Length: 329
Image (cartoon, rainbow, N blue to C red; front, side, top):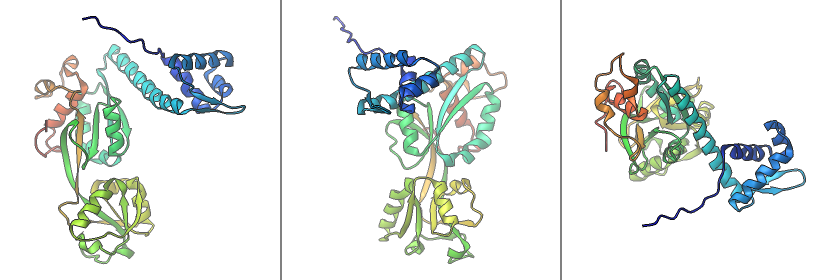
């Protein structure tokens, strides 16, 4: 059978860097100055890129250059390609210098206090040559980075769609109510029931909006939502101002300064969340777990690849932190 290869447009890294700079600066002149090159060669490079792709990437005005819809698509992808290229070059450099590699991890902001101690400290002592690229974001951003191959591991929160991933449940924790003394109707209690929140002004971390709504609906409640926010830290700041009561994961309480707040656990079995480590089903194999069953200071770095498998195998051994069941395949 004869295989026919379809000719595809050619783009090199330099072209993409030039394109990103022009898009960010909004002017060829400003971009050329930033790139320390003359304007005509830069304009020519952009024209070659448009000819190669067969689309217009810029709307050229007398003073400003704006991206077309096609240009916006390329801009997003070009940034990802450049980031991936940079990470690859760093990994090759690390390998040449005897450092095993760089592991890219995406983490929800509230996972730091759980992951860093003691697990990451133990891992670093065992594999001191491993470096990290850490990307912060909410669960959905981390999942997007993982599916695009920009990170190897995601540390996210339930609920989410498990189907595309292998996953390992980490610690389970309750949702809590963060409130000021002025809004506390039961100062002597450390827990509250969901029913007690029926008429209270709630500040909801949008990531858990549906979970809260569904849990309330199951008890024939309609929550009084004063504010929704995209960040747990914003929820805490609003609650600290006395504007309402924030519902968020227990570990998220330490993310922002909140001199006036205290927390109460919401006594509701459905209002729990778990930190979960995920990786693509096609991305990591299991054989490395055997090699790491007994970590030792003399561990051969060459046997520790791939890094993500190494990371998860060691994670499996850290029973002080990861005490919830086996790997789910």
